[in-house]
Image (cartoon, rainbow, N blue to C red; front, side, top):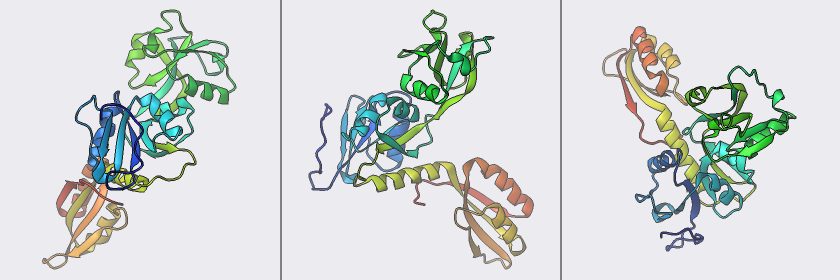
Length: 297
């Protein structure tokens, strides 16, 4: 199929389909597709393809503009979707965040000319340029501030220099681009955004959603944890297990060598090197760390 069209309710085998919206371009696109691949779903190989049927998993994927996904899901045209938290909140669509996906993280901040000593309270009545007027308006309303919002589709950091706005609100990664434009951040972050899974608010749970969430959760765990195996003496087993408690409890098995045990536990990936050092100091040996390809927790 090469055009967006309403999905059939069932596959050719009569199996119900869950319809999933995926970003077709932008910073979220490849990360979303890669995560779905790791979760066992087929993904398109042609970037021009708008619809992909994964009949084996009972899924039909629709590749859409990231900003439109919350609208399609909120209207019930599609069952669930992957988009950014910032785009969901900016759309005001009747859709709900189900699961943070851990990629595409960004901060949304206010910025003004360097040295202006701007605050959120002083924004009252000023011209504010942004690509996310719905998000900014909601935030400012919560602080009792009203501004003249100017919607721009990009290059927001140039709006002040060109005389279009007094301040801006934009996605910030390192802040380098803003500093080069003579701007500085002020006020607390408006939002911490990342890729998220969403569905229509108060809608019936579609067939296949629970499986999708289990698979995506499995990918997140596999990305954030590793399996650690090591040998340790009987006298140090309790202390070692306290260092590597695992998710439920570590697996402990006796070795052929009397007075020694093998221990296996899942540990946070980012802490693995320090944990190996701690276990070594405790007397553990043959410490191994392996990646987790997939899991169900």
